[in-house]
Length: 117
Image 1 (cartoon, helix red, strand yellow):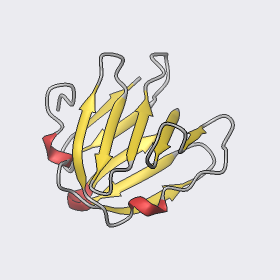
Image 2 (cartoon, rainbow, N blue to C red):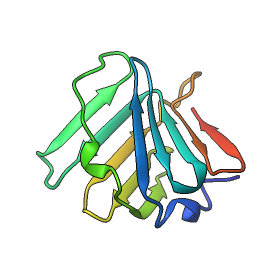
Image 3 (cartoon, helix red, strand yellow):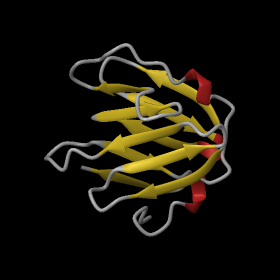
Image 4 (cartoon, one colour):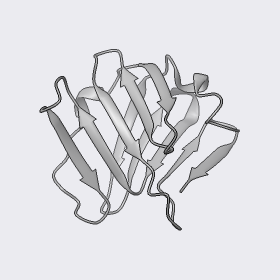
């Protein structure tokens, strides 16, 4: 799997479960698609000033429950390996890459996985 070239497998899939623990967030979508986040994530609800941040070190209060049962309309990866996911309700998740020696996030498409550092 090369998510830099093709993220279409997540388009139209509903987010069905969110699991949060001290060091990771797991996003579970339909068809066994899983994103495990272990670095930083930003949740944007509408404007530039309406966002929440979470990272695996500071573990801030963070809620993305408004994304449950909402489908993905757009997914792209920028040149820094940051993954940007837009949902049908116009809310956006920005999953950052650390570009370091540890895992930032992992994507499993139901058949294969890719680790982003």
